[in-house]
Image 1 (cartoon, rainbow, N blue to C red):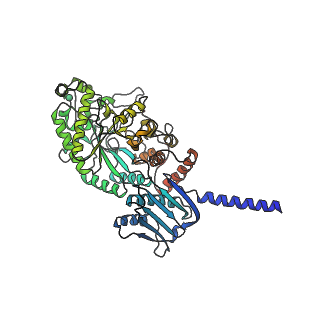
Image 2 (cartoon, rainbow, N blue to C red):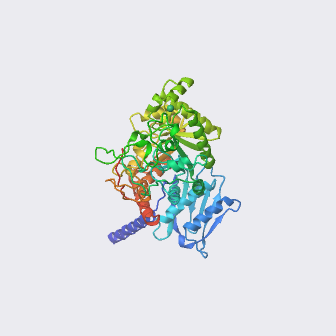
Image 3 (cartoon, rainbow, N blue to C red):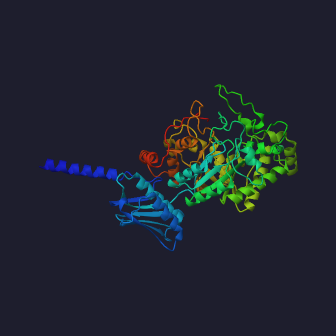
Length: 546
Ligand SMILES: [Zn+2]
């Protein structure tokens, strides 16, 4: 008898355990700071009312968002309440209380309420029987900058696709879209004062993709495509609804090939160039082949603008003024990476500038350019960001450094920026660049990244956050260099599931979930992304370029 009772008891325990395991399968990413589970569940089929605090009309849009995402029945008796609560202090923090018939989301502001809703939607999306386990969630973000970078210069994404990217960012509580709008291959932003910039610069020659391969005209990569003011305004407004700030990057003084195709007179010397948009930038030999016999653009096409000519500053000041009028973001990114500087060594204009300003070398000349541009950006009430090469020759403490280098000097670069007083955003190539294969970098590898690894404790507040970068050289190529994927499909494959690891690290600064447990959560989310969010997931077929 005892034995039978024991077996029955064990069986009950097992069943309870299985039920629990099933119920607790739904998990929020990024993992909330604190979760307590309670008995019972909320049945989404009973949802009838979304109640907002009428004093806070800003919550009205959020009520609409829930109605759009969840099935709200007019006769349902259960409710969701959205509330502004001044006792919750941190920006973006929220509480989510899920009872059997009531859900309450409260936060200091509508951003926090929005994040609480995203957590709720994730639980609903993972539910197998339309019920959500009762629980009390308290949550707040760690890093202020939780970013994603997209490179539309190499691969153009139309407005609708950028909106999809924004929705997916918001689902994982990312808050900054770094929009790389210009490069050697294309200039993608309309500048009304200089229409030729987009008209000429959006054609990066007959082939619009580099980095090892290129594609022919008419391939959908965006040959001749650019964003007009109306597109940009709509995208910024859409991002705002999803609590995402859009930060534009106009890459200068190098990676300026498309700019220089429109303004060849702003090259150091013009006789070595052939900037004809229909024959290819700078007359490069498009039949040149690399050692594998594949066509390859020449990387030394990273062309710099002339810093000696005063006209360079006139045009760029006008361009940045128009960019700042369009983009309300606190930060403006000027690029600043990979200037080879050889042209400046040989240019009479640049040499004269160095003499006049007492600049001892071309690094100091770059520093002069960066500081002059920053002065203008600050005069408009904004702050400037640049990739870490802007430190060459010295920068002001007011500049924000975006760290990407992945070499043995990482620690020195980081410490040097912090000692100089600069804020930093971490985007290291070896950890959070997603334009490579999963063999080379899996979501598990991304989760091993420690953003504060080389950061002395006293400087931790200087680290604004982290960001994934998705460069566009291989927008839709497979490993043999053939056009295979739709660009958006390939982009999604590059992002997911790696972006989930990034979102987790960005929300917490330090890991709070053990590796194996977090990987299980990723599996659940991958299922939802495929089945309910129309996201392409799978191996990225591309030539790893680094
Ligand atoms: Zn020059």
